Image (cartoon, rainbow, N blue to C red; front, side):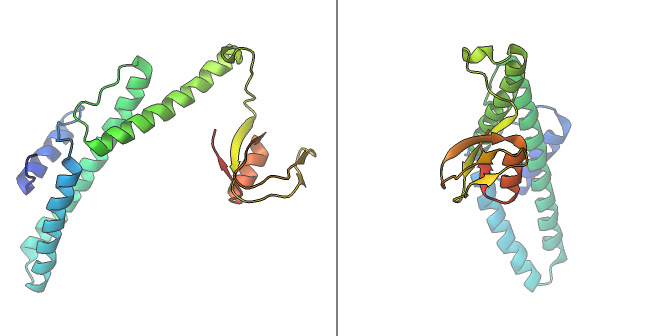
Length: 185
């Protein structure tokens, strides 16, 4: 693993700004970045005691560059996941370990969302006769809920904590806002 330096971070920052592709970084990039920034932060705090404005300015600039690198890489990863979901060509190239995890989670979420469109057009036939009601949401019950009458005048419940149930969207959202359920699909 290459040791990170102020110049290396400046190089990565410049390249990220000037290309639409992800700049190649080590898989352990964020671990190295953490170590480097920890040391720089200690130097920065020491410089405050010495009233060194140069060191303070350098750290502020470094922090800004790292935040911009992070934001640019995040946007490029989101774009890559979107393109990969359409083309079905998945590549981990130039991704740090933490970014790989995020990329695959985003890709999975996009693919789940895209399956909704497929279900709408196929009328649920894809599930071999098991039609999914798109007006309902699956929710996990977070605390015991007694029986109640919904806004549609139907009876619901009682529900026990930890159970997964399918509820109309309107009722699921209301219970979610009150932190009684967690929407899972």
